[in-house]
Every structure is written in structure tokens, then in C-alpha cells.
Image 1 (cartoon, rainbow, N blue to C red):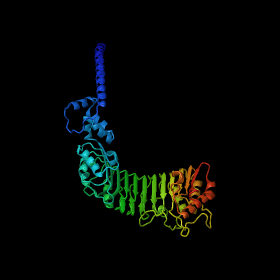
Image 2: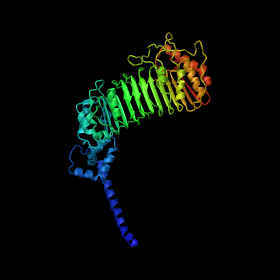
Image 3: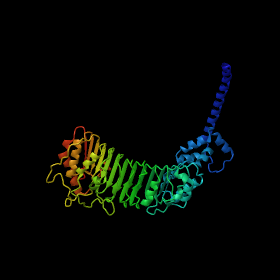
Image 4: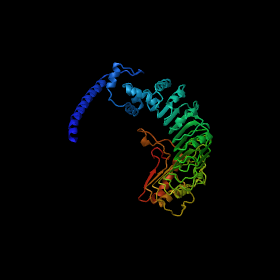
Length: 506
């Protein structure tokens, strides 16, 4: 019986294969015919049964509509819009396209097109969208126009996962992001929130953001207690970026943020206190003025530490924890800035304190046995011999201080930017060479990182520098050759960067 059934089934299978071949030949011919046609209509809103509609439907393989929607969602926005003009199937999916990235570079081919036209284009796109299925909504526009509320009501609906608003309107911060935008359904789905150049004042009635993992606030008007409340209701947060948020004076990271791994704070010039109770923080990046007091709590998971602030060395060991066993990368910048404006003043004379002891940074190695990469930025904006109090290696006593030998087996790369003839810098470098047995690269840069003539157009010159600065940079290079170069093991690659002699002959 089994053999008889198989014999009866074989002709049926053969006929099915033949039928599929004929249908594929017809389909290929239809697609080729569509490729030759030009000027297909795409502006109708209805779904009529015109001859053009039938031809269009015949040009597409007979796939389920949800598959076509998925294919359409994978296209970039510009290509998705073009496809919607060529296919009714794609036109229907265009009206529920899940990724809306609306900015000048995507929507305009002319860079100098009027902003009013950009608003009209965006408004037309949003009015033709159903508001269903948006997963990612990114909007970049140069002013908070009158359409903004209606656009957000359409796009920010339950199910959205990423919301980015960049409203470039200078210091005005005209638009206040309403808390009502973050409804229950939105709070249950949104994972990434980025706000720029606007105001955001989360109130007490705002519920928990259960799935929010990334928060970036750039030039956002928000108070410290408002931010603290918002963070307390975001237990899944993993990354927090704060840039130029000028109203925050005290930043408190609550202990409920057990998943917070990365904290970046930069140019928040009114900030005075950072207090973190996030136990699993692994990356901390700070660029601030000298008055910020930092308390990081437990740092057992810290792997990346970057501190960019003026006069930092004086406070580093007093403020930072003494135990960071997993620290792998540390970047320390201690350049001086004008305290009133927090803006570098290249030619301003600076008084160097005798207590500015770079050799004390050896304790970073003791506290961080896993440290692999160390960047130390000690560039100064000017060297005035009349006011310089930092002891030079070429001073009265050139005897180098010693510390008990200690094996540091993980440090592989060390770079010092702005190396000069400070005795404590030479002592620190010699200690590293003697005790970091795994060191493979040492870079000592005596310049300010300024462009050189070999990177300029033919006949160009290096950036003009203060004469006293160049003289001290030359002294730094002499110190390297006199006190450091002969201590470099053969397993370590030494790179010394100096000013160009042609442009800076001193």
C-alpha cells in the first residue's frame, strides 16, 4: 500500500513543480516590466482597485503582509520613503514604519534649505503616520516649532524603545518636555532616552521607568533633586551621561542603581558635589572645575577612570578610593584653567605649588593592581620662570627620591602628555620603568599636542607657541635623555615627542 500511494503521489508533485516554474516565469516578467516603467503614482491615500494598483500588486511576490512590513522596516528612512512610492504594500507599512530618524541630513539634499521647509516635511511625514509600531524616534531640529507637541503625541506611544530629541535653540531651552509624554505604556517599553537643548522637570507623579537603560541629558534645564528623583525610579539604568547641565549643583546617584556601569559628567560648571552609591560602577569620566567634591563609594568594580579637571593632582589621592582592584585604564588630566570661567587661558601665568607632587601618583599603582593603561596629562598653558615654583630636575638637588620596590605586573602602556623638567615627573617615570615589569610602551610628549608643520599644507608652519613654554619643553627633552633614556629596558618601546626645531628654534 505504501508503494502504491507513493506512485500516485509522484505525478502530483511533478505537476506542482511545473506549476511553480510557470508562476515564477510570469512573476519575473512582471518585475522586469515594472523596472521599465517610470513615474508611478505614489500620492494617493486610498487603496483603490485601479489598473495601476493591480499591476503593482502583481509585481510583488505573494508574501504575507507582515513579512513585507519587516523587510520595509529594515530599509533606511530615505529608501523606505522611495519604496512606499513604488508599492502599495510598502505604502501601508510606511504609515507604521518603526524607525523614524528625522533630521536635515536625511530629509534634505540641500544643506542650506530653509528650516521652515524642514518643519513642513516632517509634519507631512508625521501626519501620514498612524502612530502605531514606532520603536525608534529621533528628531533633530533647530527650534521647538509649533508642530512638536503633535509629533510627539503621534510617535511616542506604548512600545517605543528609543527617544532622541535634539532641539538646537541655543540657551533659550524653549521647549519643556511634558511628563505626560511618558505614560504607563511608554515607561514600560522605553530603553534609551536622549534629550538636548530643552527643559525637563520630572514630577513626583511620574511613575517608574522600568526598562530605561541609557539616559543622556545635553544642555538640559533640570535641577539636581529632580534628576535624583528620576534616577531613583530608573532601577535598570546602565549608562548616564550629563553634558552642560548648568542647573545641577549636587549630583546624587542613588543606591538602587545596581546596574549602573558608566557615569559621564562633563561641563556642568555649577556642579559642586558628586555622590555615588552605585556599587557596580565600572567606568567614571569627569570633566569639571577644581571645586567639585567626588565621593564614589565602593569602587570594587571600577575598570575605567578618567578625571579631567584643573589642579587635580592636589586632590586625587585624598578624594579617590584607595582600593580599585579591577581598574584597567586611568586617564588623569590636571591642566590649569581660569577659575572664573573654566576656559583655558593659553598665555595666563600660573603659580605652581611645591606640593604638586607627581611622584605621589605611585599610589595609583598600589591601589590598582590590574591597571594596564595609564594616561597622565600634565600640559600647562604657560611657563613663567619668575613665578614657577615647581622644583626642576636641573635645580640645586638632582638626587632622585626612591620608594621601596614593588612589582606591578599588569601595566603595559604609559603616556605622559606635556612632559617637562619637573623633578617629581622624572621620579615617577623612573619608578614606572623600574617596577612595572610588564611595561611595553612608554610615550613622553613634551609638546602641547599642537599641529606640526609636517601635518600642514606644503610650506606651512607649526602652531605658534609661547617662548617660555617651548624653552621648558626643550628642558623636558634634555631631562629625558639625561635621566630616563638609559633606564629604559630593551623590552620597552620609548617614544619621545618634541617640538619642531625648524619652527621653534628657541
